[in-house]
Image (cartoon, rainbow, N blue to C red; front, side, top):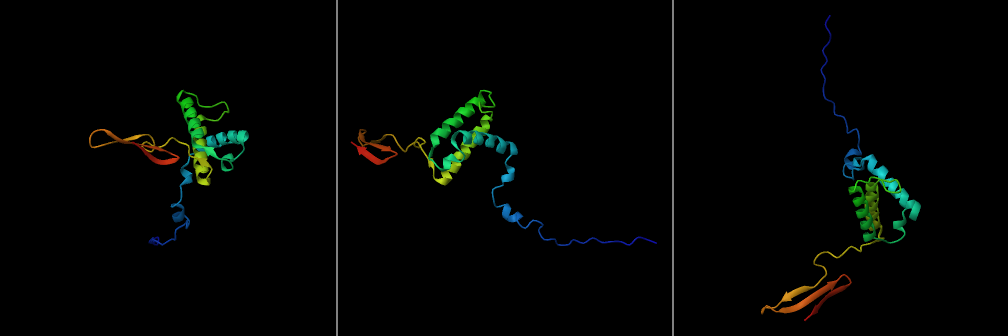
Length: 149
């Protein structure tokens, strides 16, 4: 007696994960390496112990304060030091500072005291048709352009 033959046919199966399509439109947080979260959390914990958790949401923070901290931690890392005196990784401190800048910006507590962009301040010399200085235009971040002749 011979075995019966079975023919396999494709059966349409609905998407097994109906949220999958919607999830693909959102930030893919699963791509963040766990070590990044862990080291950033260590640095944020150190800051929370010193200044209070989420302190940048309740008080204004200045961009240049965090830019300075980022540069100091980057320089220490560049010089071969991995951990700072708190025991947190220098790169974790950099990530924490970036997170604070982003979060404070979102919540309206960031004071953007970065230097003005090139061309936004400083004298602009306007030359006349005769080759002489016709005007000097100066601009500061707090005032409109002023013309001196």
